[in-house]
Length: 488
Image (tube, rainbow, N blue to C red):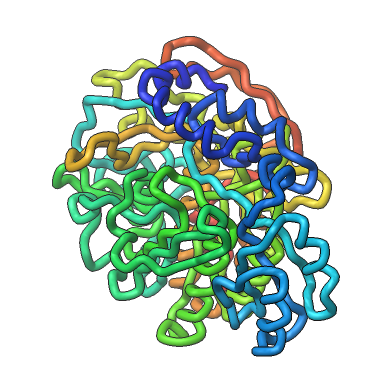
């Protein structure tokens, strides 16, 4: 864990105790801020099912993927093993309430492709460091690092496209009550915003929750959104990767920043339906800064459905280091993002302004960057695509209700929205790009980052060594200017 963790322990103690009781024995591929929770990862079974679920004979949420369309006869047959709670007609799947020891019987039914306990998903950042002296909003280091801007200051944007006309669905925790103090209303598609809840915690029931998308307690989705479109720092604009894009907030994670694959599948299907319907004439991107240890079959089917409608999906690689990638990021049709950092982070500078006042070299110099130790490495059968800034990215993050505040966050959750934003720029130039084409362009235009080691000063002033291999970088560092230029 990075040295910045020590600054969090006093803030996260109560949270860590509460969450330990909620998720004991469950995997967390996008690690929360607490080392106590990270230690629980070793208690996960090989198939990703929580130990509490495997040992229980009681009722639980079960996701069932069918090999045919949902019919009344099939629903009646499934009803013999439990109660069907929700139906995903477009992906031929149901969620249901059933007993753990009935899952093998459900799996054996001739019309069932897969059945498994609902899987937990997390989107918490790894690092969180407050900084009191945020000055006038400028192009920040992370946007400079991906060649969206040519340097610090106002008016230095170097990519002509802004993502205008592109919808980016942020499947996350939703937005804070004060989101209008961070984002202009015209950049948030309130008419399409949605909240889904339930899942495993409600024994298979997935429900819609009107207006809850804008009452998030966690701030994760707000910070992720700020990377894509930028944000207001008390009236001063701070640039984003695709400031002209329109955000569709879809709350699929709960108020504590975690949720279930069944709920995420519902959110993905919803965006696929929008692309097939009212947004048929617009490019649509999904960003998912979340993940878990296994790919749920229903979640996979939802991804396949959305991609088939023309949606391009980006996701975080996970914050589990050598433990491997999280899903859905590791699933090949998804464009996954590892977390890179800049060697000049936390360098002494007047007023502490390295994040907005130091110039990242152009063109991108791979020797100036490293891969964060928490960033998930690619294991056999997993697909890591590209690396993007995920270390000490500044954005709105509230710890007190009703009071605006801004934090540095670190995690692959922060890397993924950079990639989604660049995809939005590419889609503005060519709205007909497919997911496969976009991934190929991103990888082909990336700056290779060979395996290596960097010594970097941390927020506490202590130098740390970061090392990584070829399994940590994907194709290399994200280059927005090169990707847009390579887009036909």
